[in-house]
Amino acid sequence: MRQLTAKRTTVLPEPEVQAELRGLRARIPHLTGGLVATTDGLVVAHDTSGLEAESVAALTAAALGVGARLAEATGHGSFRELLTRGERGYTATYAAGAYTVLTLMAGPETNVGRLHLEARRAGARIAALADAELDRG
Image (tube, rainbow, N blue to C red; front, side, top):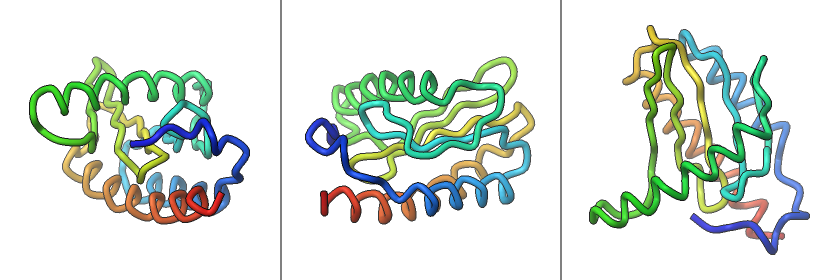
């Protein structure tokens, strides 16, 4: 995962990424929201209601840093995903290329296997969109 510090002014493909988020909401029962952010915490696109996307993106960047260090320290390689289970549901973060992450929020009755399956597929599509755009910038 790379930081975007030199690429902050690059425009990301927000409409296409937004379409991926809407598709996830349609395919995953009990999904309550999602966002795509850069690895340094800037919102690319979001489908959240009742949450401040900017705050969630910043927290995602912090969690990503800890998750990446933990994976490396335990010899498990580079960061792929992080799942947090709370009393009222799940928050899951997935690597989506070199520059972006996908974070999803879901209710407690969510099928976690389905969540992972759909999020991994969407993450690959988002990675293709974002990495192509950012590598050009």
